[in-house]
Length: 111
Image (cartoon, rainbow, N blue to C red; front, side):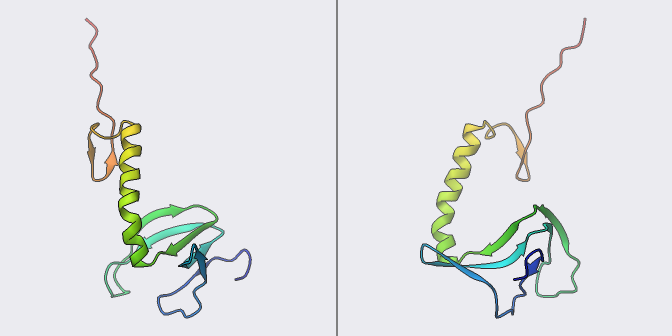
């Protein structure tokens, strides 16, 4: 990889960099030292308009975790997410579409 250049590996790229962590091969599909903007294309047709997603910070690396490892990680991540939400008081405060909104405070009118 050239330093200072963004690299995105295509689905058929045979030279996707891989790093092993605790014996698990992790494929680094994008190395973005300059950051970037993620867009998602649904389906197999590359001509479908992309859906804008999130802004990626400088130094972001996107990696693919093997399915069997992700299946083992998912319950622990969900539990961590639930405990964090409980600690921060985000559960039970009303939410919609996965986004948390604080409860509206009642305002008293001056008399």
